[in-house]
Image (cartoon, rainbow, N blue to C red; front, side, top):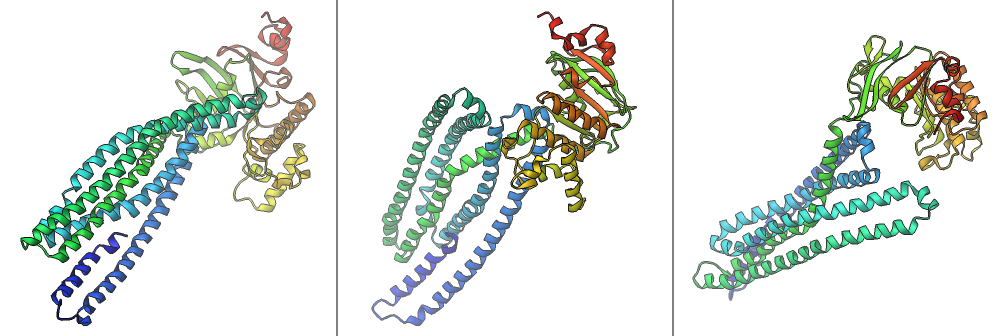
Length: 555
């Protein structure tokens, strides 16, 4: 806006000069024609340049904004599992949303405000000094005070804004926690307590925000005073210079107009500083989060792309979540290819930790998991996890349709008709025919947190996904513990029939789940107590028998 009008005061000065020269002798309108033509050409050139700047701005915004979305998406999906466990999901969501929006807003502010206004001010300053250096100094005399005050104010406000954002982050984190755990909130009638807690945090955030608001009020008032003083100086001192023949009335008018072209663009920048400070804080949080996640981000395709075949050997495996607390202590055993190995034991004995180490969610103190004669770590993470399919007690499904959830297990290059046929076959085999009876059939959206499905239905869909994936190895982590005996029997029968020649690792508390296992390993406190077949271990009357008959355990 200001750049487009930057030379208008010069045209006004030239017109005034002609009018003053013709005073008393009449005005010839032809004298104005060249100036008006130049003014018109100038306007059209500026329109073209403005169009060009807007095109560059829009293209840059789309490119950077889209690139930031892609990088953030890849970053979140490549984060290490340990980072995922440590992050607050609602807080991360706010950081990501505000951070990406801040990128867009900062680009917009740079092109539409800062770049344009700075170029405008520099150009005006050059015009002023080339026209009349005395009047230029007079016009700009208040500028240092304006800039110095704003820089000091912005520096102090930046620290206050960080504290405010921290308080609001806590508010979103608590709110997200309540939404995630709504069942607990409703069950224990905690609605009022959670609202009171949120109001307390909100009150603290608003209390922290008041000093910042007052700072910006003082800042804006000071800026307006600076502009008015600058105008007064130009008129008052300009008249004295005119009396000394150092300037003319038309120049005084021109410089008076140019005050707006110097101070108001800077005022616009400083007014935008309030938003910019918030945007910079949000962007710094996004950068900090990105650096934290990227520090140990998973390289999914780094390593060999060979199949997960042959026996899997755990040799003197040691692992601790902290250096002082070892949860896996020198464990050694073998999972032979096409066999079923079961891990049983008390809670916190390390069973699921072993499964997570196999999937490389955690890195052991030294890699001692082998695929025949090759270290598991030599395989790419993508290949390793694609070869293993995990079914847990709490089945995870995406907030998408049944068809979309099941299609994730099929190759992308498979024809739609073939995908449909395989999905229907898998649903029938897993006894998930309920999916066909839903109002929208396979196009039924499961819903966030899968609230539209029962436990039984979710496990049937999990089994259907397993049938579609057809992996080389299956990991069942308490997969049937929440099911009744009849449903558990059916799922075991389907798995034993369809996946007869598959390697299986079963983690269970219910010993009925592992009776048919080829090899059973009993764990306690990160160590192996005993291992062997089900019948042999029961007959020994050791740890497995105690698990099978809890009445024999002394509490």
